[in-house]
Each structure stands twice: as structure tokens, then as C-alpha cells.
Image (spheres, one colour):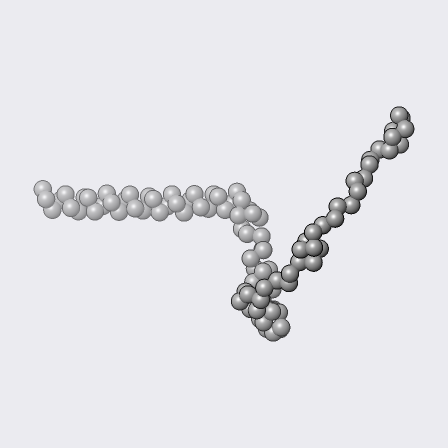
Length: 100
């Protein structure tokens, strides 16, 4: 109760829901639901599905070691760029040497 005598929280009266909300129609038997039921019934498929979920939800290298992964990515990109630029200059050297 509050100091002025009122209750701290007044509850609203229950709302009467329409019939379609109280008793919804059953879900349709779509192809996806049938495949899911098949996978759940067969132990081998169920185990494969769960292992796929575990693999998908694993912690990635970028989440566990963000700095190391970033440094390695930059080094790989820098090495590749350097090799491409050096190859371009070597190709230009060979091309222009034959022209002159």
C-alpha cells in the first residue's frame, strides 16, 4: 500500500480472447515439417543434425583470438599485394626491354 492508502499496483481485469486465439487451428503439414519429423525419427539423421548445430554454434577463431587473426590477415594481404606489384613491375621490365 502507498502512504495515501491506494494499492501499489492495480491489476486489470482479464480480457476475453476470441475463440480463434484460444483454440488456434493446428499447424499445416508442410514439406519442411514432414522432413523435420523424418529427421527426428531416424537416430542417425538426428545425430548428424545435432552435430551440424554444434559445429555451426562453435566459437570461431576471430571471436577467440581477434588480434592474432587480424594481424595474420593483414600480413597475408600485404604479402599477396607485394607479390602482385613485384610481378607487375617484372612483367613491365620484360615487356619494355623487348621494345627498346
